[in-house]
Image (cartoon, rainbow over the protein chains, first blue to last red):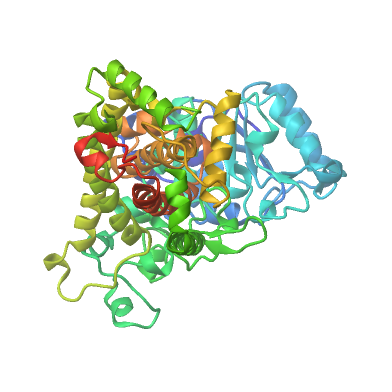
Length: 363
Length: 243
């Protein structure tokens, strides 16, 4: 911890990592960022010459799965390098310091690197009851978040909690859990949704920011385009079965054994923006669909509140009903159909019972 | 057209005929011009295709047997949906153009004179007519006020919503660099999770199904009960008053 003036390369070598391994890491990172072959040497050059960017990593209302994912970044090198690459000055989960000593670091970084440090936030802040549902260092977490965000360069919102709210913000959201971009509105915020985000996505993003000294290009939702511009569905290896119309219809049917498309089993791949079907998990070993389970859209807004993970159509809960669009639509169309039939019957009855004399009178 | 006496109607019909430059013999008025009629039937066909394929996209078809490389059924269903979507959209754009170029009746489905008191009185009369309270319907050259209300909210607005949400969903497939995303990507600022756009688009299908039910029923019913041509009017373009 500390010593932010040192270069990444200095730290890496001090930790006994060979120059060969260092270059391997640079190449892998350049590849995973989708950059050309020359980028590897640019990354190497930047890491050798630039001072490390101080990072404050804070934990709000969350489950720490983002950190768990982060430290399992696949390439063996990354788990050694990345934690030293950034100058991770404060992270309550893995830092040696504790108590007042730890809290003092926050103030120190804030004063020393005003407007230069990156604030990485895992989890979000509950706002109900004055933020009393998440107390950190004797104060509501939201106060700490606001204070540290004030002097930061940019904020990384790790995971679905920080990006969208996730499970603690699911209905009825008793603690008033609120995503970071609704609390901090005057700083650039990068959303890295996922529950958790893919380890390589996290490390690549940190590498990008430290290498180029700027934030990556973001999409409409504030997510880095390089990882979140396509859906799981667009690059899914089961996509040919979708186009052919070959679907799994039960978890133990023949189609499931053949590895057909999980669309009818409620797979949310067609509506989920993430890199799972390309980068995959655990060093590219697999991802949910490859393991035979549909995607449940963990990197999407409010994915807990859309009904069962195993339903194709979203459950709608309005006006005390609980049904999907087809059930509501069929009920409405059915009711109107019945009304039309009844109306037609009354019309016919009226015409048949109408006295001939009255028609003549009207004429 | 507030007065329902035959004389007043004849006068109204004649006045309308003078406006559209056509004869008012036998109480016949030229209402729906050829482009409107053509659009109506192309639009109806597109909606039929969109409704059927859309239903199967939402609630997928039974699984196909055989080799994957021999099948492309779901791909064809989606292709038909997207193609019919383009037909519907281009037709709708043409229909907006025609609202300005065509006769005064061509504008009717694009607005509702909610601010006009007499309009509400006439809507109320139509409701009484459909509730079997009023003995006789009023005669209108084009849509009656209640029909205009239904047309505007259940058809014009619903179709506009389906076009916008449909192109936004289509943009998910064509990608973030596509013109579809540039034009319609803002939909995802309203619903960040595109799953919600799917749900609303799906509810829109049922809105249009419901509209079609009412539309066809009332057209046939008024043709018989109101003593004026409705169904044949969208083929010939002429509204005939039978008494």
